[in-house]
Image (tube, rainbow, N blue to C red; front, side, top):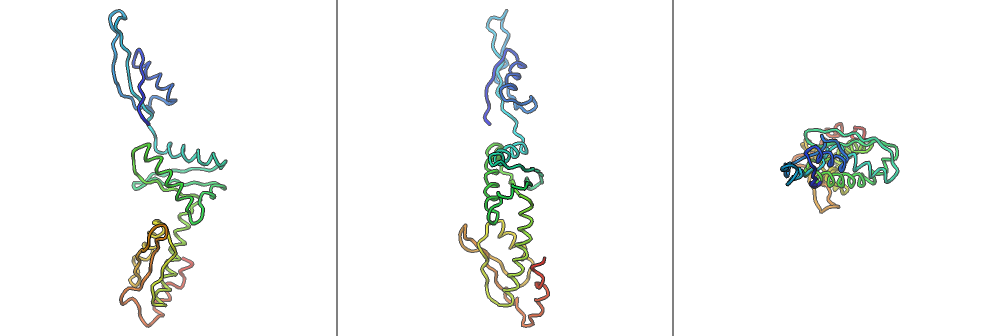
Length: 225
């Protein structure tokens, strides 16, 4: 928000005008003095006290306001819980109808997250990442991806050939890389361009042993993990 200039016969009068105009308490105003004015002599030559003010925008309030408008426009009632961490701001959204914003493989959720980041970054001149989740979708999706990664790794080991996974967004690819980073037998790398960029799983040199039974135990329950 840009500063606006307000004047009054006194500092207090100028501040009161600002409070009325912007609709917030004084504690929520960023106030800078432009001209302290003067009383003049017997009222002659008096000059107004001039300030420039803008709202102090609270990060959480801004997130709630933006998402609130989005959900209200769709007649969706939901609870918004915001948790600030050292790395980012996590927004947990819960509501029976809120799930419609998840979309296929989380595409709608990712779009809403991107818009929220743009709005907040522009208002606060801050690039701290905001992560949106609806009904714990991301946690569930992560568990599903980890199980999928292990299942495909097992297939690579037994078939001794590279396997290309389905196209994924950057977040999903990171989950796959992380899930297999400690596997001494599997390489993971990405190829292609967005939105069709995908991960390829390959067998590391020396990663296969003819005693296939060695590998079956580790991955036999991959789908249940």
